[in-house]
Image (tube, rainbow, N blue to C red):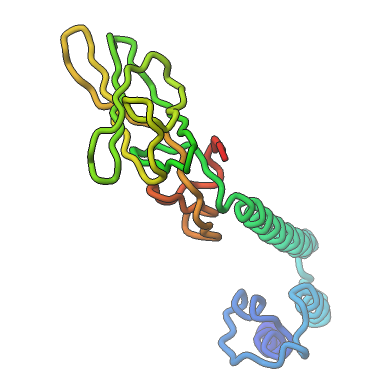
Length: 230
């Protein structure tokens, strides 16, 4: 058996894959992959040599050999499963990229205080009004910071018609929204507004997966619930 044990490293060095060499602790330089055998072939080669070299008066434990074969079979199946999972992951990433690309240029409702008004258009607005609120006011200012519209809000979801306090249509551009809620004690609370924001691009395979690059908001995960409005 000593001769057999001494020859293991030689066999693995000559025929083994990199995985087989690492498992056997053989420190050799990489050889031409075309001459290398699979881990399964290496195992069978060594197994046959083991049978040839064993002492007839003290044969190897059969149960141990069967266990080794079962272990090799399990490793092979796990390797196949790992390969299949990698293929599924690649396909999923590709599908996400295609789905995300179709959203570029569209608008989603996002937590922001700014939104663009198109010429002759309107802007949907959403917010959560506290139950203790007695009144809620929405202030809308233009890019210069001038107040152009102030309205009392009774619903959590409504549409600003794009007009000022006098009913005149406002110019297209970016506007700032600020919602204030007042409770029974007169305490004012600024509420978060949800407004249309444009999807400008997509980040694929980033540290957080596929993400949408939303104007004025930043990155939003594709897995998050999206409220598309245009």
